[in-house]
Structures are given as structure tokens and as C-alpha cells.
Length: 123
Image 1 (cartoon, one colour):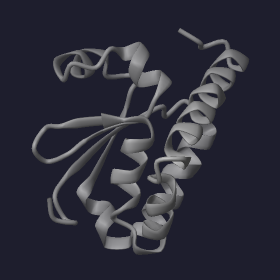
Image 2: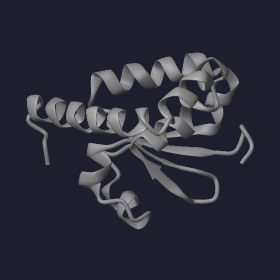
Image 3: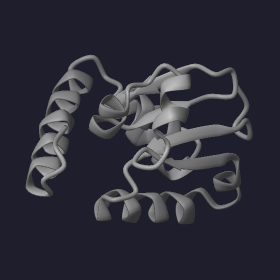
Image 4: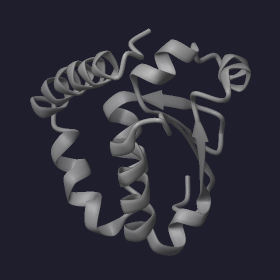
């Protein structure tokens, strides 16, 4: 996959932190951000289902679809998305390490569940 191939990012647009992260990504990615389509999981249940993603799963974890239609979620989705931004590539290497990845994945899942519970949106 080239750096310019299209990615579809299924994210929680009702989350202020997620919106800030998206804006930061777009600033840092520069022109590469044009090859990313941001899709709000709260408003596209049927589209998610057609892609084989349960809306609840999409709310609980970031999902990214590559140009070939493969969908990855969680830390792998972050790695795929971040690998397009030169300043974030070293971080993708770090979070992809076999010791770091599972720890970070567990912390991420716990953080998302707490955030959704505080907002009264935990599915």
C-alpha cells in the first residue's frame, strides 16, 4: 500500500478527545490527510455492518480500512494510521513492539470503556 492510498477511519466523533486527535492528525499529516476519510461510527451503523463491523465494536475501538478493504482495529489501526505521518513513525515502531503492544492495547480498551461509561454511552 502506498502512503497515498485511501484509508477509511471509523471513529467516535461524539468524543471530544477523538475529535482533537483527528484534528491533530490532519495538521501533522499535511497533504497525506487528504487520503483519509473519517467516518463517524455513531451515524453509520449500516455501513459498519456491511463491512462486517458491529457498531458496538466500532464504538469500543478505532477501526481503519485500507484501500484493499482490510479492516484492522485497536492498536493495529493506530499503527496503520500513524505510519503515514513521518513524525509519528518512530512511535509506531515503539507501540508495535511485542512487549508494548499488548500492554498498550489493554490500557486503551480500559480507557475507552471508562470514557464511554462516564458519558453514559457504554454499549
